Length: 215
Image (cartoon, rainbow, N blue to C red; front, top):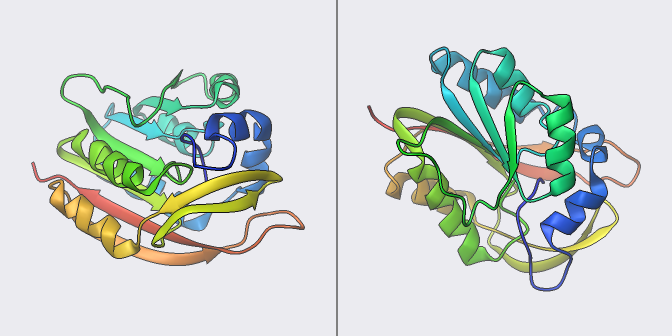
């Protein structure tokens, strides 16, 4: 899980991820589905493609791998601490503090958008709206790589990495339906179970989606 804003009862995502900082990278290192999605993006985009990383966290692995692949990468995150860390660790990308719910993309959007777990710490209608917004930023011929924890969940209070947060999500079917409604063609989707690193970590079900906008 990475960052966007507030649920109903827990701390905001900005507060949580300011506190978690670089520790997130250690707990969620080497997520196979995320690495596969980055490989897919690297293989389907032209050199110099403009990529937006939503909920960019520490910049690793997503922004770092995409910069190394020769892309023009911008990362956005609501956590000032995550933006600070990312700027230090991935100087080849641009990072700014921004909220996916209000972010305004440049004219023409992006050749690709990647979003690895950024929509969980918000209310369910905001999850749906943010997913549609991100899809609209994908330019013709472009791609979207998405990962989330799926489920028809609204306003669930949990303890995550020592912090109380309120999370929401959508079912896998609703994610696919909203992306199709936004004009994207889903070319791959799968669910997988991942256990974060650390003695108190619980296994998570992850949904991965690769989608394209027709040229």
